[in-house]
Length: 358
Image (tube, rainbow, N blue to C red):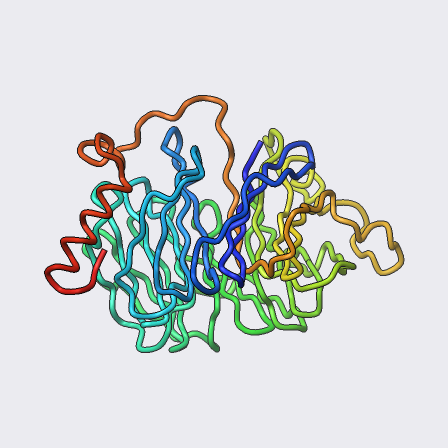
């Protein structure tokens, strides 16, 4: 079983349990004043306390427990919309903002340990290397930047071929993708050369690698969801529902030893999509390569009900059947007194000193 979590334009946070291709609404509440632009979970950290981070137009980052579905606290250090969030290993997370900065936070104390400045326009996207020691970022200044998170400094700058709205590593971090308007470029990490270039033909709203494969999934402004290989489009579906898909994520639903083919991947995973109509869909990218002549093929495997909010972002989190061990991020004083109380005290002290902060 897994949790599918989506933020909305109205500031609401919505979560569903997903099991055997069935959605069940778990929670739905107002979380931000204004649009939620990004959500992130620490699903990659085994045996950790499950966390959800959210950010949006109100310039605030909020932290929630995915065990109790309660807010733990909030962080306010950015001077612009929080545009993206990602966990960096098990002890840190990064936040990007329209103010042009990237902040690196330590989970244990919930404090900002590095301010990564370099983008001279809004930062659109960040994604951490699986090691948690490096970070890629893209922004409106048409640069791709690699950051050394250990030293807290920039390591490399590359000019992109246009304004990139998303950067994303593949699983083994041998490649990364960039969304560039109506194109997606997949590049080799070692050589920085293009492995393959995808011309979608319409503005790309989101893209992601399919876990364990070299396939790339895209959602575009024309209402199509596609899966691509280096040879071209291998699977295409035109959504019959309203709204546009704003976010994609892969969700594991079964064992997967090898996913050499798309059909093998679809047997063990679902491609989850969040739409501006309020629908959270789960697609199994298998069967006919194109649905143009098959109306039935255009139906997703499952569609969530329970909200008409305009969904903007998406995260998935596997639900463990065992009680997680205490994460180092919650050790010491924070675990004894509660993270929420600690963050309240930190905000009060910060305001008394400078009128701003956590």
